[in-house]
Picture 1 (cartoon, rainbow, N blue to C red):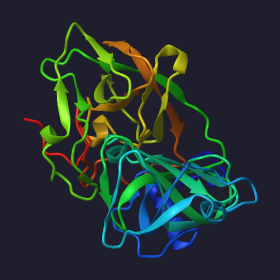
Picture 2 (cartoon, rainbow, N blue to C red):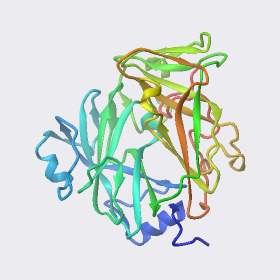
Picture 3 (cartoon, helix red, strand yellow):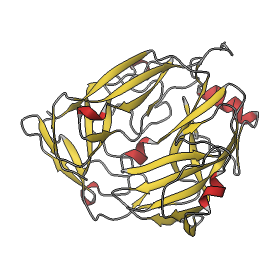
Picture 4 (cartoon, rainbow, N blue to C red):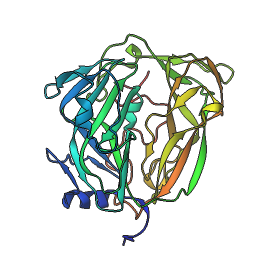
Amino acid sequence: MSDTSAAGILPCQTLEALIAQEAITAVRPFDPDQVQPASLDLRLGLRAWRVRASFLPRPGRTVADRLAAVVMHEIDLSAGAVLERGCVYIAELQEALALPAGVSARANPKSSTGRLDVFVRLLTDHQPAFDDVADGYRGPAFIEIAPQTFSVLVRTGTRLNQLRLKRGEPPRLATVSVGVDLESEAVAGFRARRHAGVVDMDRVGGHDPRDFWEPLAPRRGELLLDPGEFYILASREAVEIPVLQAAEMTPIDPSVGEFRVHYAGFFDPGFGAAEAGAAGSRGVLEVRSHETPFLLEHGQTVARLVFEPLTERPSRLYGEGGGHYQKQGLKLSKHFRPWS
């Protein structure tokens, strides 16, 4: 039995109970696989807007109020639409929240979104911070979408980000450094090709990776990051998320290196765990260099994993019933066929 007063991340069965209680609602019925072991996938609604600038609503202001000042044009997502790289969009989400007192939330891009260098952030009314949802929030949710490398095709129902709900302030159980693997025998990583085609965000395994990515051969355990380029690398260490915990990968102090790592940071319970038959799974690192070239070395710390407790054991673990990234090594997003 769960302790209803314990601080922690809410597992899937609690998320399903909140849906049944209409603390989480949606304009269309929830998809059967929408609730993950410790997170909820969010779906695009019917409309998006091309905007001239990113923004945050101030306390007392709604996203819709602020949106009116920056909209360039409205986009119908029902038949699908291409969101172009280098542009910023705001889209409505199908889900809305009426969180109980003591429950707040945090959003993150889905792993498949981050691996395509699509920068997404959640916006909620009156909240002057991206991705954070206030304790007891009641209202709609929106998503900012900014494709950085590839233009992407999305439609109503496409899932780009996910929501993790928590009760109280969960304690940090551990913080683990994550190093980079640059000594692979064959391919040490991938660099995104410039001026590639459009990626259909709902087409799994439907794209030839060679049209979008350039493989990187290992050289003396080093990789020179070029400014403005996007890379997919793998962690040196295996990543294991215990079944009673969840984790988020966070950037290191920027003074350690002129690059950003891991746009998509949530790891659900059971990822890489022996109990789920996935011992040895690696973390995939999404890396973008900033203004200056940076020489990355094998084993260098590039991110940190922060572990937090769940309020109770989830009724299912990551990868049960199929998971694209369980048992992974260096791996591109699910949209691409295996590299050969």
